[in-house]
Each structure stands twice: as C-alpha cells, then as structure tokens.
Amino acid sequence: MSSERYLNHPTFGMLYQVSPGNDGRDIYATLYAQKMFFLVEFRQREVFFEVIPYLDARNQAELNLQKAKRMISEDLPKWENLFKQTFL
Image 1 (spheres, rainbow, N blue to C red):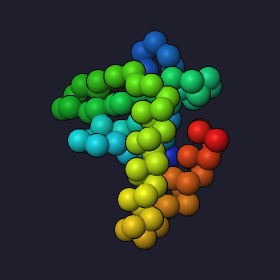
Image 2: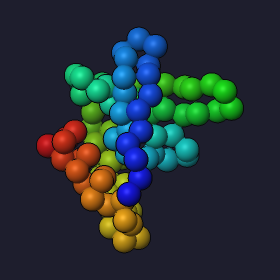
Image 3: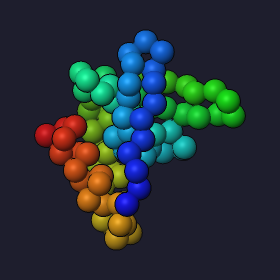
Image 4: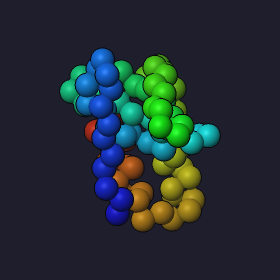
C-alpha cells in the first residue's frame, strides 16, 4: 500500500492528501481543521495551491474511489478509509 502524503502550506500549515485528482493535481485538506481543501499541482520546482469547495473535493474523491474499484486497485482500502475520515 502507498504511504501517506503530506506537505506544508505556507499559510495553513500541514496538509494531507485526500485523493489523487485530474490533470496531475491532487486534493489535499488541512490536517487539523479538515475544513479547507486544495487542488495542489507540482510544476518543476514550484507548488501551486488552489482552494476548492468541500463538495468539489468530495466529488473528486468519490470519482477516485469508483476508479479504484473498477481497476481493483490495491490502494482501495487506503482511499476508502481516507474518504470516511474526511467526508463522513
């Protein structure tokens, strides 16, 4: 199983990966408040943060779960657990 991914936001502190996203952008949430969600994109030596609404983050995470189920991914339990902890 893949390891958990964290990164540090310059203003909001520690973020954790909630779900892979589209177009090379992943969804992260604030570690402590779990109220803010970001699309994070890594380009060369820069990291770009875009704040997204809760429902958009949840929708993207649900799409990731559906894809993992279709592909019978070994990471499915990890993504299901993160989804439950973050959105339910």
